[in-house]
Image (tube, rainbow, N blue to C red; front, side, top):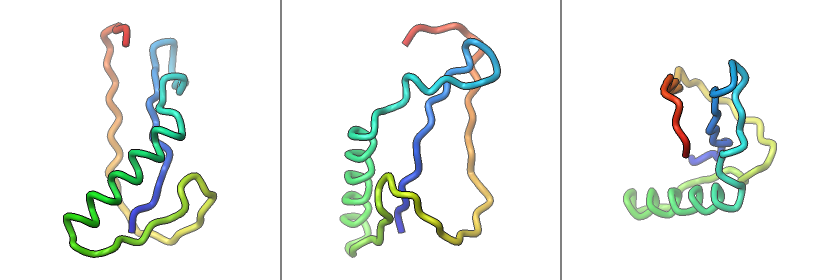
Length: 78
């Protein structure tokens, strides 16, 4: 099952609270979600269950990660 989650691009340039101003917009994120699901179905050779993109969903899952946070101390312009 592929479940959409918001993708966070958080900039910590100005302190400890991340800014999400440069995160992908929902239309682009939906396109990536659909492309990923289609590629997974092609690779597996079967249909893949999905959640509803952008919906408030409640699921039961047992997961221990992963979460990746990249903190870059160099000041960069993107």
